[in-house]
Image 1: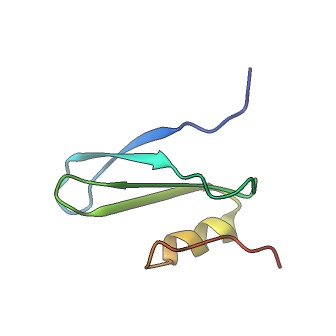
Image 2: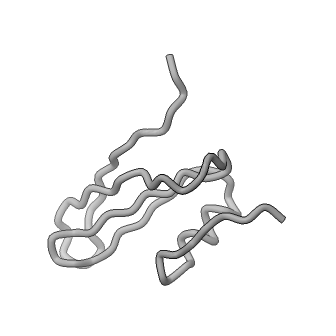
Length: 72
């Protein structure tokens, strides 16, 4: 069995409460975070991430969607 993250997750839209599918983003081979992103039919952007707490937090707080994880 492989330990890969799910490619598609479904969340409830914060704006209209409809289900919105978020897709695993291909960022890098960084194992610290698996970011997900999707757009609801109402146009609301939904983001989610799993992984290292600080990396997830910085991703969720980035407003422009151009987030990338940098190793310090």
